[in-house]
Length: 481
Image (cartoon, rainbow, N blue to C red; front, side, top):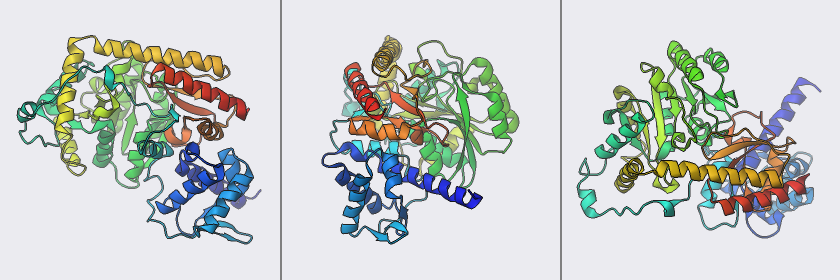
C-alpha cells in the first residue's frame, strides 16, 4: 500500500471516529435502531457538527464502528436522503447537503462525554450512567438554609465579584493550608466549579497554536477547555503511580506554553504521584520556566495520606492550584477555586470577568458553611469511607460479571480505568448503551488513540445503581464476545 493510500485510510478512520464521538448516546432513546441513528445524524447536521458537503462514512465502516448491522446504517441513510439532509453520489458515497448551523473548529464543541452530559440533562433517562464522575448525594448534606439576612451580610455587599466572597476565600485558604500548602485569602479566586478554573487557566496562558502537555489519559473537561483555546494538546503516558518525570522532561523539550497535571488522585486511574516524583516534576518545570496547572479537585477524596502539592515544593514556580467543593460535597454546588501567588491570582480574577462576573453568592455561602461543617465534624472521613464502599461494590460486581476485566487499584477519587481483554472499547460502549448503561472510552479522556481497550467507569453513584449498571455491562459484554 502506498503512503498516499495509507494516509487516506488513516484520515477516513479518524473521520469515522470523530463522527461516532459526535453522535454521543444515539441509541439511548426508543424505537428502531435505524430511526434513532437517523435522528442522531440529523441532529449533528442541524447543529453544524457535520459540514455541508462533508462525506459520511461508508455504510459498512460506520456499521462496524457502531456495532450494528449494515442494514441499520443503510436504512438510516435512506431516511436522511428522504428528508433531503444528505445525498448519495454514484460511486463517491453519501454527503451532507443541508445548510446546517455554522460548525465550530474541530474539538471546540467538546467530546462525546460533554454531549452526553448535555443530552442527559434535558430530561429523565433510564440509562445507568457510569461515564460521568459527579456526586449525587445532596440528601446526605446537612440542612443549611440561606436567608436574605445572610445575603445582606456578604462582602462585597453586591454579592458580585470575580474574586468571590471574602469570607469564602478565607475559608478556602484555610482548607488549602490543610493540604500542606500555606495559603492566604488574597491568593484565592472562587470559580463556578473547577471546570471554569481550567478554562480561566487556558485563557491566561494559551493562544491558538500553543502546545499544552497533559497526562494521557486525563480529565475530559481539561481536554475540552484546551481545545476550545485552540491549543495543540500533547499527551504523556502515566503508569500506576502517575506521570513519569522522564516523559515530562522529554515533552518540555518542545517548549510548551503550559503543563496540566493531576498528581493527587489522577482521573481516571485514581493514582497518587509520590513525593519524590513531585519534587522532580516541580524542579523540571521550574528550570524550564513553564507554568503548571495542578488539578487537586479530587484531593479530598483520598483514602490515605498523600504528599503535599507540587506548589508547596517549588514555591517560586508559576503554579495555579485548582480545587473543587463540588467533588467533596455535591456536584450541583458548582463552587471551585484557584490558588496562586497574588499577581497570578489577580490575572485569573481579570480573566474571570470575561466569563462571568462571579459565582452565585448563594452557592458561595453554602460552600463556606459546608467547609465549616466538614472541619467541625467527621464529614470528610465519612465521605471518603462512603466512596471506598462504593468502589468495593463496583469492583465486586465487575469481578462477578466480567472476571476477565482488569484495572489498577485506585487510591481514592471517583473512577477506575478498566482494561478490556480485546481492543474493542468503542464498539462495546455503543453496545452497552443499547443495554442501558453508559461508559466513557478513551475518545473522551485521551488526546491520542493509544487506548482502544480501555473504558472509564465511575463509582460515584449509590451501590444499587452501580450493581445494576454492572449487570447491564455484563450482558453487553457477553453479547459482544
